[in-house]
Image (tube, rainbow, N blue to C red; front, side, top):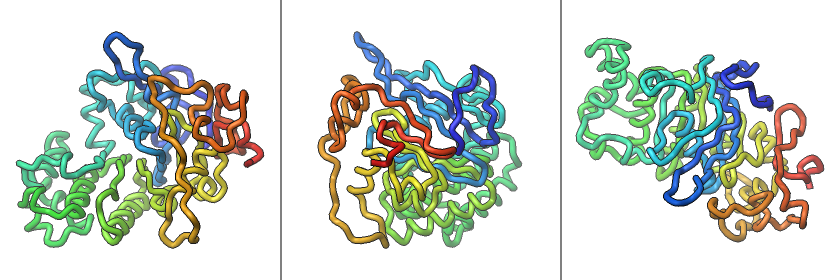
Length: 337
């Protein structure tokens, strides 16, 4: 992931990345009030066969960011500016019809809650073959064969039998695997996984991650939204940390987790536990994320930051490049203090 300046509108960035997001802004419209900016100038790259983690607390803008790229926002939301280049096309400038042809076929999505994302009234066969048939990838007979194979690939036993069941007849871990099978049955170039290991036990979590590693090894690019830093370390090559709708740090995952440069990243590490990591006391981040309708002046994290200094931290903090592959939005980032 090389940091680049925003490209000219509708001019693809000079990058070999599978997906290049540049200066993405997303707002929610409100009655008798200014629009609420929930994604504020986010940029990142995803390369083929690599995984990018988007990390942050709930409400930091992680899921809204990827839903903005996929154009899956509610009617009350809009993306007034930004670009999302995929296979040489800006997804944000395509028509809804063009986007429907890309979603599901070229870009797969694993939603956070499989129980809610899957239709409880349709069998797995109906739901897995639907994408293949709608996109005209193959006929009904081959679609069923590919659906059975996809279930087997994600480790669901007896896929020939299980394909006839309904989602509610599966355990939580099985539903999550079936959701991944649905996303991968069309063999998309990019997979977006929103907390794919949430609400499953450690054994199933490892199985899901190993499955995703296999997809990555076959050249699939992956965006993983997660709050679990251990998952990010195990699976992801690059990491982006978001706070209050903005990127506050980005770097190769191991560097970011071993030598964080932004106080918020340090806070996340201090308040989390990694399996197999060193024993240490947990240090929760004080306070709560800010109300985006009343964003603090300057660095949005400074009211919760133990290292904040006035007035410097009440000024806008731009991302500071630290070498070719990492940056942090803190004036102390270069020194690592």
